[in-house]
Image 1: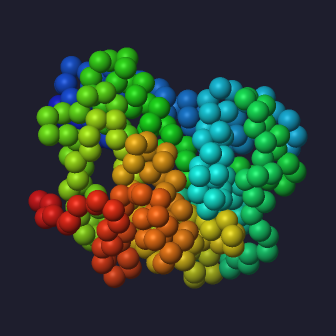
Image 2: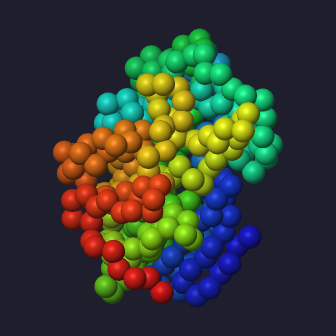
Length: 302
């Protein structure tokens, strides 16, 4: 379902919601066309749930990737290195064993109990040289932790440069901006679910913000609730200490890498984020807010 209101366009994408905002209403149509076409390209390149995606048909050994998939895999490997392996694209097999083997809305309400019997292969086993990928036997790639954020970054800048207006692209809580910001900056409400505390923040031109959640993409197996953020150290969902983690950064990929790593780190997350100079907001299971760096104090949102 898409909704075009003035300078804003809302739509559904990848079992979540998307939004495009422009600084000049004249640019909305062309920007939306660029963004929607780009998202189709990304889905065809790396969807784990499309049997015909380029990622799905990869086989062990050496493969020549398209420029887009090569970019997305490179981004995933860079995020793994930047997070000391806390964000790892080789969790695909673990995801499948945990039952997340199709789009989230198609998963059964419950299923047989799962037993974690394998470890994550580890991102260092994957080799990428330009567009040449070396994929070891038994390694299943899942680019879900980074591809959405990379798409937001790429498409916000592509659309802004092509149309000549300021652009904000949001994909399921991952927000990137391109071109000039509106007067007063981009106004963003940070709130993962309707019952979570809300905070209004201002993004300057070219900045980004991302949120990772343990309460949105969930399913059950054997009566046990599971979520999609996998701890590569255990091959299991990360301990759900935080309902959500939000980080502001220079790119959406950088922000999303930090939020995912923070969810995995659980109680160690605030110190890890602070040591690396991030500005962040963490919401625990009691809906209490922990701020890191220069994140602003909570403000009421109408």
